[in-house]
Image (cartoon, rainbow, N blue to C red; front, side, top):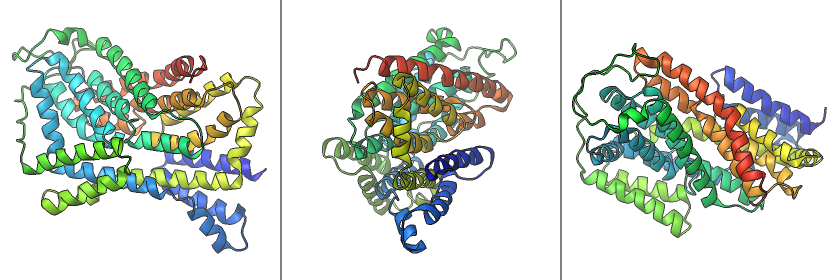
Length: 437
């Protein structure tokens, strides 16, 4: 068996192990990169081959991941995120039908500004499910709008998903369109959210206001709203000095990254350190809440892919895919692979592994546009996050009231696996088949 095939098999094995066992995929990828590197990479001695492995460490991506999650840990700790959510809820003035859309937009805004998708879901899901109980909103619909909102903002030019995808495209010398990627992600997630909204009770919510109406029981029908508790609405926190400074910092992050082309991670860490110096008590423990598992996962996968590139696996795979007589069919298969694996694993890991594997195929054929396929692959790999086996889906189930948890779990499983089948086909038809992108 050639070393190229071995490296692909090892990649599949570590994804499988991380799915069935509680081991971080990034840690497995680092071990695999080390073992494969010292045994197969060219070099006079093991030390030289180890240096070659470490040359593939994604330093810039590491800084981005640490920086943005550090900043949002502070924003969460000092109450800025809670203030944003409460301010948005007050803006709807009791219109219950708009509350799920507020959750969608707030989650999208968090990820668009750089928050990690699972972290955003972890922040908003408890709040959203609390409102679902209070206002008798179907928790499955609420959960889907939160997950889809996170994916909708997840491919902005300054987001984690967007950074990974656009970085791989730029490094490969392929044509890219970061704003198209962001717009496509937002539009598709918005469209499927509209479907979910009306399938699970949105029409009835449109005419309802917060008038203290009697609550319905969950036994009335499978799609009925969850039982209410009669709890009073949560009091909104005030906009104090620390929260004002944090909001200014978030705006500064967006402006400097979008208009001055400064590194997102370095700016985020700078803002976080300034906030810590100005308000050390509010920022206490924020470093401990950096998304270290995500950092390990992404950096480990990218490190392993770097070893694959050095071994020539990526070029070999591109040559093999290029021999397929029907490039459009091959493109559809790639999208299905991304959706199927991501439904059970981390989307960040999938993006870091599959997009580099698709690069040689894109450079070896004129029948498939790079922008179209990369966008379709990114959407296919992220929208299936609604599966209860993915991080976002699991967080949503965990934050559902216990008496409705099984209902939400089964609903997310049906919806998530439906997306595995539907989204690759839809994005392929819209973005790849016309051949204009």
